[in-house]
Image 1 (cartoon, rainbow, N blue to C red):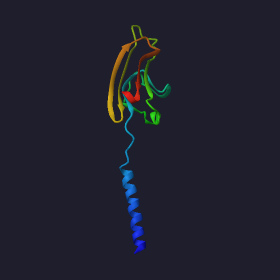
Image 2 (cartoon, rainbow, N blue to C red):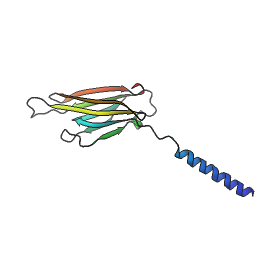
Image 3 (spheres, rainbow, N blue to C red):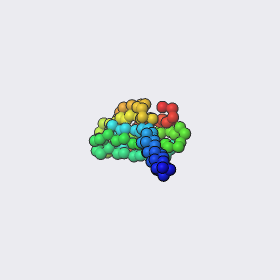
Length: 136
């Protein structure tokens, strides 16, 4: 009888641990969802470049989501900076259009949506924005 009780108790403890693990909270979504990039984007966390994405031929053909969780974990109010670089156009006569469109997700919530566009001869940063991650 004592052996049955011990086995039942052990089984119950293992079952409770498995149930607890299944209810463990998954990491919350902290990401940047890029919908439009012309020509390329760089993302920095506390001054360190953590992501680069170039659009093929100036057009982003798919949504690209960048997970910030590995880069902000354990940091207190990290600074996340997004920069758009417009490539130099040697054949453009009147200008070189650029555009960036993205959504910011913090702790599973959409907290900002940006669409910016303009015209420049390129070869430099044409758009930049910083977020103090804990205070968006």
